[in-house]
Length: 300
Image 1: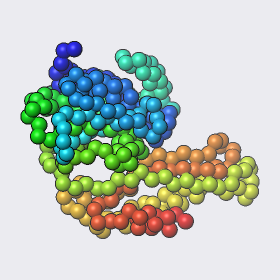
Image 2 (image 1 turned 180 degrees about the horizontal axis):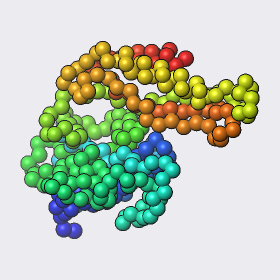
Image 3 (image 1 turned 90 degrees about the vertical axis):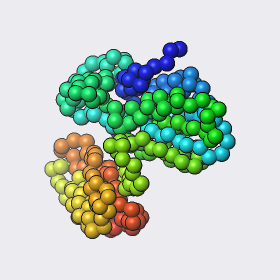
Image 4 (image 1 turned 60 degrees about the horizontal axis):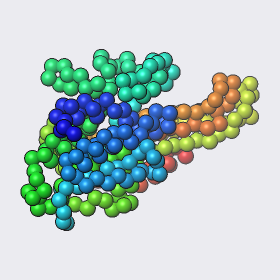
């Protein structure tokens, strides 16, 4: 098969939906993208290994290796993108890859999210920068070397679920793979080397109340009202995290983002269960368990 150019590879990857989301209704998996990368890399002479993630047939990590021996360099990228869906919207149809995206919101886009569209010398598409293009660039960079040029292995790593539960990274840690001395993670940084980053935790808060009919609230305990108070405590905790700063980071303080909330089933029933998922990003120097303990005290 003829080699594809970098632009052709980017086009193909953007056209392959691979949304990951904590909401199962939005989660697509990355199997199609992993299969595409595996084919390309095998054609380039890499030994390709696919590692299933979280016992899911639609999610996997890919480890592709050229060269042998200890050590080595890893070029690492994730294959998934964030969602762009908004609940309750009715945008029906099929994209050109055959994926059903009924109810998906295109309103924030001026071009097809699944097409790499060039405007003013820049490419626009879902995942173009974060971070499908890096995988195409890593393949192109590998073409400059023969196996005889490599004194240590060159490893291309493509992971699942970076944008949601980090299941791909967890699976690699559990497996102790890959083993190498160095790694370049191709997240977009404006080509400026980044030597540290905030830690990231995706947290879940679930409140269980007591349901009942809305005509007599005294007979129930609303989990939604409890969550209202808990959100106030979370926002107070967020304010308290601003004291420790690392000026080389943007923003230079820790953050808490309230990302998704769900609860209740009908206006005339007291809400018996409410779930909030939030994103916690801590600057180096903060103990995540101490922060979690403070949050638990605040929402108790």
